[in-house]
Length: 268
Ligand code: ADP
Image (cartoon, rainbow, N blue to C red):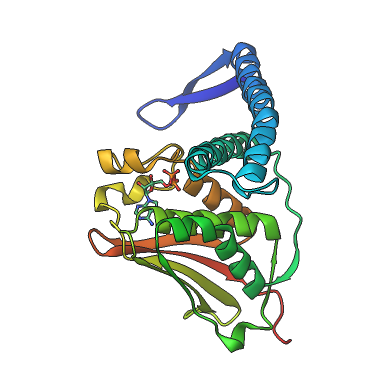
């Protein structure tokens, strides 16, 4: 039951009457619950067979059981890539649903920042090679001992998403740079940046970019694929871990997405 009270005052400001409304929202709650259960059942039912399809295709593509003719290799590669893409979409939908329901738990521990950055790069290695992107990691010795208190998998998921977006919206053979420095404002924070020389983001889209299912409305963006969920999930994950996320962008020149995260240790 949802109850709301609306006081009404006369011209002198004296309380005249209070209107109290009662709404039976049990149907709405039941519907919400059904929707959430439906999403999670469908997603699990889809994910299990897809995982085995992607796994089998990956064994064939990587020629674990012997060499395959180039034409077949090409076809299987396309199927493999698409199975991974579908898995990605399903994982995003599941994550969004779990975040909305408050069902995501974070395994917060201290982790060195540099290996996390390197692993996020490795996650995108195939995509980077495919698009012939020059992926540059700025190695800074002063960061070697820096640790962040975070859920390692979740932070990598966000960085990997920022990197794959940067690659996706870059021109072929463009450059993507990942860097991490002490924040300019505060010495107890780091700022991780992913910078591309891609399409950039139109100013009218800046306010909506972190909303669910939002994508720049252009045939170019639709052609590049995606769900419009990645950044919404990323923001939620980063904020729940105590950091913040933002970006700057100039159309036609590129974008720079950044994460500001508190440092866990002040000495090595
Ligand atoms: P997806 O990439 O799956 O569409 P995201 O939430 O990650 O979903 O991104 C939402 C939208 O923001 C993208 O569709 C694109 O329009 C825009 N966008 C995100 N990152 C970039 C980038 N680096 N350069 C240009 N546009 C971007």
